[in-house]
Amino acid sequence: MKIQQTHSIDTSTAGQIACDFLAEATCISKQKIKDAMSKGAVWLKRHNKPRRRLRRAKEVLQNRDKLELFYDETLLARKAEGALCLLDANGYSVWFKPAGVVAQGNDWCDHLSIQRIAEQTLEPQRSAFVVHRLDRETAGLMLLAHSKGTAANLSEQFQKRTVMKHYLCQTLGETPAAGEISAKLDGKAAQTLYTRLSYDSGSNTSWIDVEILTGRTHQIRRHLDHIQHPVMGDPKYGKGNKNKLGLQLFAVKLAFACPTTRELKTFELSREFLEKHCSLAD
Image 1 (cartoon, rainbow, N blue to C red):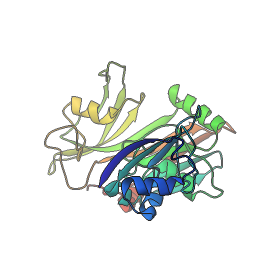
Image 2 (image 1 turned 120 degrees about the vertical axis):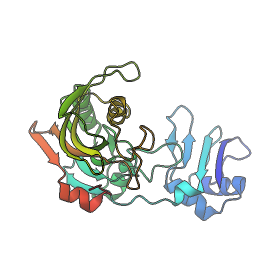
Image 3 (image 1 turned 180 degrees about the vertical axis):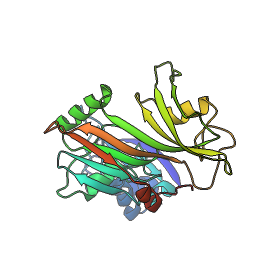
């Protein structure tokens, strides 16, 4: 079942409980509505305040409220599993994001996002701010901020390209020993550097280390497809590179300046870690 509804609250409906109102309007049980609210599928726009997710089932609706429901039963039934906090530094945290988990939610839910997972699992609980992104299909290191000041600091580091980001990637074919790809993406400059680590003639695949100096959408996947060495398992780009293991692209190294001490912090995932937590090709 998939339902998208928008309700404008007036004097005839003001005073009702949000959960009760939506259950009656949709014929969905109150229990399922409460679950949808907790997972970020209900939005409230009140007066001149910013639109926000409404998680409180017993919220009393007010005149002129705008209530939105994005209900996807299949999506809400999914569970986010495998995320690991590698470091909690209070102001920021470093996570392993598994494939299938998104950076942040959308209108339909946020329980499958690393942002929401962090907000619900870290102790003490606190807000989480996304300062960079990984594709849903990409597993690896992600950095989250837990205050607006820290988020601004880390975001500036990413914008100024002072954060080092390395990826491990399996590609189709034998890539050159090393190379630089600078083809524009969406009309914007994009720069990708890579070094071949190994080549297997039996599978006709290469493992490469990739460093990106810019952060365009699907940059690595699009750039490698551009040079006819698409990422193995990529569902969107390339031909002859499909597999049963999923996208063979992993964010394995992240280096940045600690917002508090300015000390360089470096995190790197080992091959053993990837083999334990990911569907890694031989």
